[in-house]
Image (cartoon, helix red, strand yellow):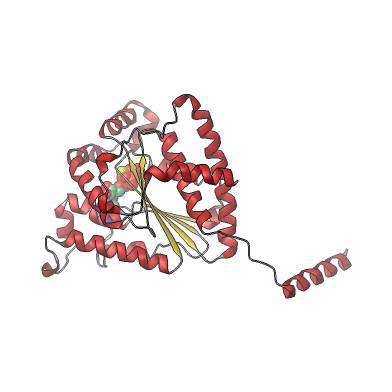
Length: 299
Ligand code: ATP
Ligand code: MG
């Protein structure tokens, strides 16, 4: 087990950003596979399986201990593989201890609130893992790339200056610190897919009938804003990667590698909590013994 955790830690080091100040997206290659060549992919699968089993054990302790919660934020361009990662990595986990939420374009009710509100309502309870498929980061990504969305938010005009993104990023950074101080471990994943690989995956959605439903013409139009999105991601990671709420810039051109890095990062996060089952007090032990006596008496 320690071996798996050590390997996990080793794996994720190059992708973990816990001080964003010097972060540059161009230093990261979406096609990186951490030196693992595809002929030992079988090894990687085994490691992923081991990781998933370990995750399930840790989750059981998290739930039993009921002190911490874990928030996993997934952000990416379309077709980077968010859904697949969430499905694979969480496959071994008890659904009762896990809450997944996908954030779409906000509803009228959501627009009537501050931008963190809808996410705050869906934070994981103590003892649970919460997964955000998109999140409040959309407010400094899609909204930044499309100013007309900001205009629809009906903020008081005096509060909408050139510095609005900087202010939102500061608010997010403080919000995450607040969560940390209240026992929520925050880990953020940017699945970093290349523009070429996205094109290939969109083509596949067109070519394969069973994938047609996933195709959206709007997603293809969004490609025209690729550079603006990359800029927005870079700014967001720079401003909000901290020791207590690190970002992982996960290479996403190879799905098997993406899954491995994400699983490893979650294992590392859980291991850092040193989770343990609640200890049984002498009094509880006496109660257990009495219950045993009673049940034996019935037999
Ligand atoms: P899929 O992989 O199934 O396409 P998805 O996460 O892309 O999943 P969609 O319903 O296609 O889901 O898209 C959700 C859309 O909502 C995205 O384009 C996203 O940018 C947008 N969105 C999310 N949050 C906000 C927000 N706060 N303001 C405006 N748009 C948002
Ligand atoms: Mg989509």
